[in-house]
Image (cartoon, rainbow, N blue to C red; front, side, top):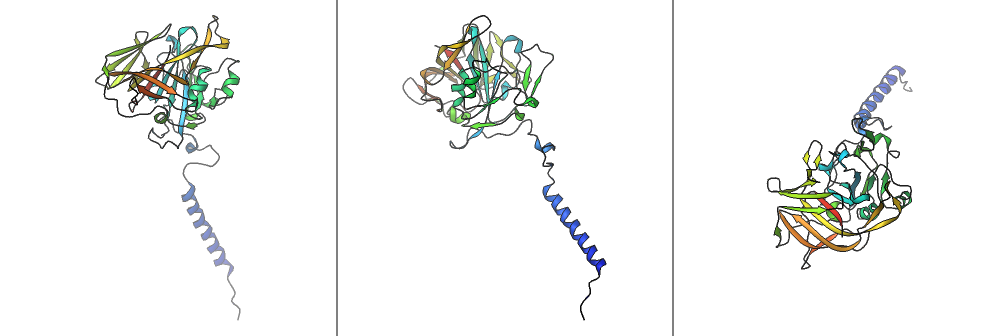
Length: 328
């Protein structure tokens, strides 16, 4: 006699199986990401962890560069203390601007953010394809920046990442949340600026001055912190919430500077362009000592190497670095 299945138990069994599958599926995919980018997990953390300088030479690491204002109205800046490398660049009128490189970690906020320069193109090419965060540029510079290797990030490119501080005057009040900008990548700071043990010889120094036409940086050795403390125009340069800016290594890199052919500021001063590819004199400060030598960078894609006057390799210490691009 053929067996007749009873419909009621079959329906109940099907319902039970569906419920079990549903619970298992929920357990597997319930990680806070809804899949449409609206969940909390879809947003990058404020301090996204990043690989350090010990990565293999072939392995690109995240690199974000922010152009930072440093005139009196822009101080104290925010986020300087979190930078792996800070470049001091000459700009119009004998003043300077900062380019802060972040790779091992990202601060919550960095700024005030200011404009890019033609010098940034060659300088940052040694980091591969980094994100370059800036407020804008002169119209004549835009095509030059567009042809660079950098991922360009202005407020119009990532509006959710930028905000203005109403307590500060414009244009010194634009800030960025770097975790929210498109991520660039390339060789890390430890590959671009090699690290290692100090050479055998060195001259003990308490401080060192790097003078520009209208500004002066002083680096004072702190035995207590094991770092060089940064002062600008006789005043400590402060990173908000973190105290005086400091570095384990300071490089004063003497560079050729030429006049930009097309760009001038409101007073008629030409925009200087730094030649960061080539060779020249350099002074390296680390561990309370001064080492005089040379810097060398054969092409824009190469990192910068330092040697002593006798030709011995002159690596940098392992922590934060300030590089002062001082006109010859």
